[in-house]
Image (tube, rainbow, N blue to C red; front, side, top):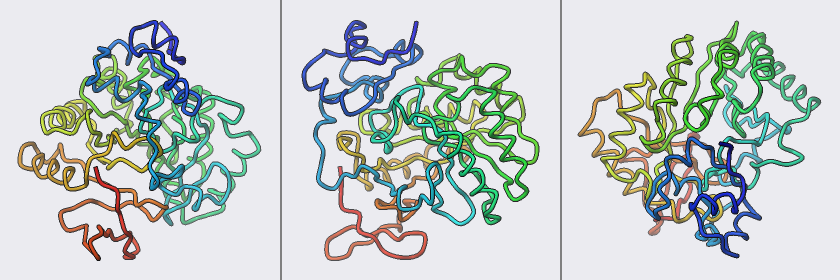
Length: 343
């Protein structure tokens, strides 16, 4: 079996009904569903796996406050491939290709196959030089695109270059691969993740416990057993994990796999994703229920990326205020910003 990349392929599997409206969606946003994920799908409208990866006509409903760059990467990008939002860490985006394309992705306007799918060698060198020439950079986060879509040789070479930079002490890789395409976690790939000169962390993106199949668990175990710790990142999504039973099962599964729950993200304002968003108040209520229900090991931090590039904030019970009837959230620099959209 191979990854499905077309509406016809999805329709042939009985996962979608091919309509002109879905043609419009597919013309704007990439499609990819791995065999591991399609095997979990039921084709039902309320299927939490299908909802994440199958194109929907709801994506054509784009609201005025949604943004093509909802977290403001461009405003903090001194050169292509680098996002430098915080003093001590940078994002390094080497590619725009993923094993699957999430329908709620905040980078949905830029990810997908094509001529610019990979950072060119010259631009990669420039990005590495930027990191080397900025001694305040303590951590480099590989994201994009999914860094584990690189070959083990290519990934290992990049990580080796980063580990040789004296002030880079931590390298983090954000990925869905261990869950959605666990076969990529070969011995050479796992070996490439161990870096001389820096500590490596893998942050696994998974949103529903069904994604953590036996094969995914083996892939994650191979990483952890090689001495590379893992964290989790999840997005709180309406119709996927917006109930206490699913969140409990997901966070417990992470901990059972030796993966520390890290962030639970409030959905970003990406175009055509309003059907995934719930209100911050609903998310805070779920977090309160989680705190009263499961071990402290299972508690992620509920996070909002303030639209426009103003940084991440934890959505604690006291993190929001009201000004003239509008929600206000404080950025890391203490400045207030209005957050208006609600589910």
